[in-house]
Every structure is written in C-alpha cells, then in structure tokens.
Amino acid sequence: MKRILAPLSGAVATSALLAMLGVVVPAPARAYDITVTSPLVPQAEVSSTLAYWLGNGARALAGATPYLLPVTIAATPAPRGDAEPGGDRGVVPAVAGARRVPGASRNVNLPRTAGRVFFVGADHRPHWCAGTSVQADHRNLVATAGHCVYEPGRRPSGAPRTYRNWVFVPGFSGATAPLGVYPGKQAFAHQDFTRYGDLDRDYAFVSVHDGVVPRRVALSGAARYAAFTGPKYRTRTGYTGVLLTRAGRLGDKVGEQGLAYNLPVRGSLAVFGYPVGHAAGTAPTGLHRSYGRPFRVWDLTQKADELVAVHAPFVSAGGSPWLAAYRGGRGLGYLNGLTIGTSGQSIALSPYFDGELFHVYDAARHERVTSPA
Image (cartoon, rainbow, N blue to C red):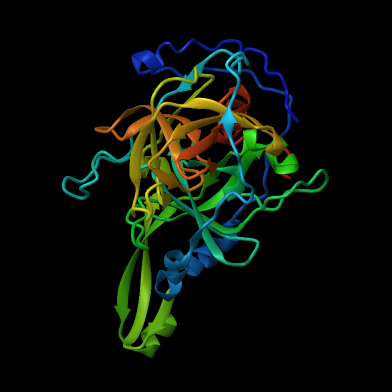
C-alpha cells in the first residue's frame, strides 16, 4: 500500500550529483515495515550451495535460464501535470575495490561490481537475474530486483518465500566465476512488494557471505577423488575437483556502487545488463552497456504508478543496474535504478528510487536485523 513520503530531514540537495557527490547523507529511521529474511543460505549450508553450482562441471550455472517478471507491464507515459515523487535528494558515495590487474580484461570500462545472481526457483530449476555490489558497512551488499529473491504472489499473512541456493557471481562469463561466488546471507525488501506484489517496490538488497574463487584440478585416481573435500565430479576421462580459494568480502574484491535517491527524472543513466532479448532480434552475450534518459511511466492495472523507463537497444535481465554519473575509468557511479521488466521490446522499467527505497537500503547496509520474516 502506497504511503505519501515526507521530505527526509538532514538530506542535502544533489544538484551535486552534480559535483560528483561525495557525501554520505544521513536519514532518520522510518516506522513502515521492512521485510528481513531468515538466512537465505545459512552458514551450515554454504558448502552444499557451492557444491550445487560448482560441481558437475558447473552445469547448473551454465544451464540456468533468465528469470523474467511473471506479469506483463503495458507502460504508458505518466501525465505531464502529475507531480513527480517528492522528498529531499540524497546520495551515498561509491567505494573502489581491489586494483584491476593490467591486461586482465579488455572490458576496462565495464563495472566489476555487476554480475549475475543465481538461485533455484519455485519450479526447482536453476535461474538467474542480474545484480550489483553497492556500498555497505560490511562491504557485502548486492542490489537486485525483488522478484529475483522472493517467490511472486501476494501473501497478506505469513512470511514470503525466498528462492533456494541464492548466490551472486560478479563478472560472470561463460560459466566461470573469475571474481568469486558469494552465497546470499540476508535479504531486505519493502513489505509492499513482499506482501502485496507492488511493482513500485520491486527491489531487494542482499548481504552475502565472503566469497570463494573456484579452480578446477585433475584428481589422479579414485582414492584421491574420495578424499577430496570440495565440489567434485567424474568425467568420462577421469576425476575433477574444484579448489576454492578465499575471495574475502565482495566490496573489497570488486568495489561498491554508490546510491542516489529522489533525483529529478531527467538525467542520463548508464544501463548495464546481461541481455535476454534484443530489439532487432538475437541478444548479444556478456555484460553490455547502453545509455538512456529516463521518463516517468505507469500501468495502473499492475499496481505500478511510480515507475521510470529508458529506451534500450537490448532487453536486460531483471536486477540490471542503472548508474548515474558513471565513470568508466573507475567503473563506479551511483545506483539510481534497476531493471524489473520491459514494456514492449525496447523500453526497460525500474522502480523510482525514492526515500522509502533508501530506508530499505539503509537497514540492509547496516544489517539492522530486528524481526526476520
């Protein structure tokens, strides 16, 4: 259910996104409900979750299919006379991660923070969405679409159900995880989405466990295979084990995007995503970038009256980040949108990043857990 948001006291006006921002903007706590999950992947299940995705030649990673929003949005431009969402503007700064290794990647202007989230859906099959690392106290937070964490459907009573074996893989390419695999720890979302399916609140922030970087090694003989304690599998030609090297905290490894909220809907945004469709036909592969100028849209038949949209040359996966003031040399900007779905073949849709989103994010970045759902 929608709430009218009062201006955030203590926030600063960001004509400064304007000055590349650089200040953390404090905001008071709010009384509305935030859904906090029990652990997505409890510590005791981290090993089995990694084995699911990395065992058997990482077949589950390679065979996962994109998970799309299960409803159709027919977005139309919001009336010009309709007031834009209000509230004082605010920003949270981006944080750099480990220095890039020269020559390690030709995609030097793409953010290392972006990647895919993988999970086992309600149909018991592996699926994926997109996500990005975002600034947090413990350097361990991923932003994605709410429907990439929670099973769809209204639940006026009872806890919302989350997907199983949830992991984040930054820099995912060709079933490899060069920057590590990070199992989900705790998810934070707006209760208007988790209980009522409100698409204006289709976002989630997930803290993750420390990651591991997998490396395949040949195991000589059945005895060594039996003694190997990590993910492992047999092939027609022998035995393979997957060595897991500690990757540490997500933000330390790949950096963290900043976050901006209550911005005017007019500045150009960089949209990064793994395409699942293309306006002209076949989707390109790998992480791609496009630029778009957002505009306000709605679809009142779907409880979606505060969405923003950009024209995009490809249809990006749910959870794909939209970054304001993006600098390719640093690979950092300010998260100001994320794809939840499309209208037609060439319009990407995101919730408007307002003060209510900031409060969900603020609880997640501090990992303030009060009463898990």
